[in-house]
Image (cartoon, rainbow, N blue to C red; front, side, top):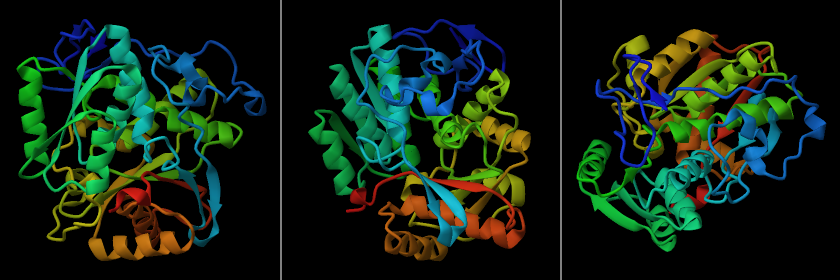
Length: 360
């Protein structure tokens, strides 16, 4: 069963059900699974199932998996932070968290074809897990998507549908195909199953820290799939009694594509064409993102291209071979420190979300 947090309507979950509420807002699972037991000893967890170690928090069964999850958490002394290496995944990005749960849900519902729109990483993840599931996939991408990302989608056997124009044009074309009945919308922005997967970043992070959450987590913020997933994951841990508090969630958006930051701080004339993975002008779950920021005492700011480029070079020289969008988060970390939102006593974690192998 799905529910709309905006108008409180409910609807059935199925391959032929609407992909969003009739009021136009995103749907979520009506029931949120929570374990009815104390937090386990983190050193005794069986991590062999990957992120499915935390299946009791998830509303679907692990039907389509490649062993994803348990990405490393490492010290990054030059940044006075810890980095969670979310680029260490089967397809090279954190989007595999959502792809495994989305395709598992699709398999559970009997879906035959999935359709997704993506700037690259989500498309590659959905295509790869669709191949694993034996489900056909069509991935709508910008015509100028990076060749490495296009190749990853094609080699998984999915159909690549290039669309001229901005990221919004890609989404519009994809939704038109969904509305024509060409497939099930496996959207990383709209599909509730995707967020069920991205919440596992919080479960892993807390377990890796012996159920102690950081003071703050700084994340790239476009559609907010990892940001909102982290919020839901930390909230689930708190509600289950496995942790005692919530971290502040601090977003880093690309200048010129920063609707959340502009809502909070006003418009800016700057632009950031480097962090291409978060160039989203109209996030599907904007109201939910703003609510998550308010609930955690968080924030969202826009970072510009020069700072992102400096941070990308700095990350590479330190051995973190990531794609440019990742550098927006560490650029955001520096900006938050300059503003006093993060001080020297704060314990901070930054997820690094995509592999540098996807830059070419």
